[in-house]
Length: 93
Image: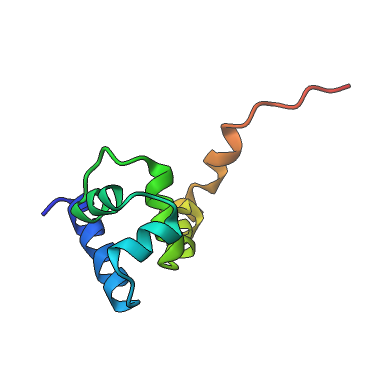
């Protein structure tokens, strides 16, 4: 099972545990039922906005934000200085 398929399956399990039908979850996320099914199958062609809308109604949006924050990892904290180097230098007035 690919990573996308595993994430989709986890989202399906969260939806079921929250007692949401596909129809109700799709309505609350403002996506179509076929789009919800594609997300739950792990279709990589689904728009990020649709994925995030479903994550929001499943209360997974904060977890996703935390999981993708590089400063939440040892490597990210060790290399935090690299983030500063990527910014453009300020010009002096």
